[in-house]
Length: 327
Image (cartoon, rainbow, N blue to C red; front, side, top):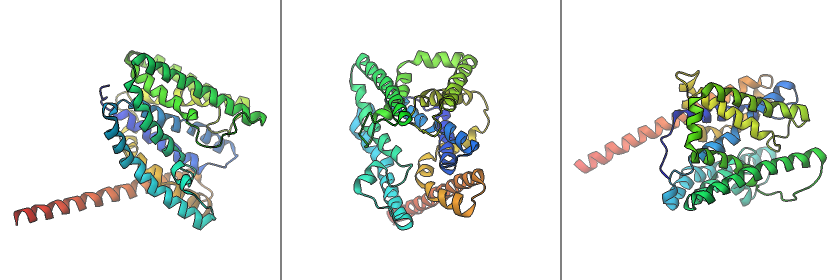
């Protein structure tokens, strides 16, 4: 259960992921071919975030209580502030009421659901490392295949308008397979070495898997099903692997910028949705790509200003404390 040295490639993946989130939200509701295509491809990002989370799940598992509390303070507490802010915002602007459980489950804005699942997995999944490896690995495989089965069931339900599950609350089975993929990859370092030693072959295979996941909904008529379909697995796994291979090569395109964006993922994720509908519907209704770019750079600018202000405040406080000590 040793901690892994973090590869900058993961920040690049997160950067590409949050850009995909923005584009997905800007293009949502569109029925033209471009909007449908953007939404279909952009679905890779949420599974990718869970796979990355799973890969690093063992980090801090040996000190589960302290590690969990740090994650709650660093991630979930800020999320709660934003969830309340979105609830109040949509209450004033759209008359949408919200409850305490809406805040917990991330229902005050359509993109916040991810945080609930992130924290559930962050709290529970590290406990698997206290189990014998054989039991842990078997559990992860069960998580993976049950997730695939769940997605297929959800796809069948939507396609044929049948109710197989009546539960409408949070569904962790719908996502825990992607956590399992990341955790399983960490369990098999030889698989990682094989990918590193055969990048071209693995990239070709990854592209083929991604293409299958992208093409299948068009052939089956399930475009627009979002995350409720079996094709989500080949789409997200294939594209994630393809991008991971490319951004592990020397001097890949846009690495520094995407890594910079990836290091600010949480702030962009939490705040960007305030701008989406105002820009795409009212201010710039005719250029969705421009709206997405404006949102991205606005969020980056706000985060940069905030970070610099905090740094100046910290420096000023340090100077005052030093002078007080000397006095």
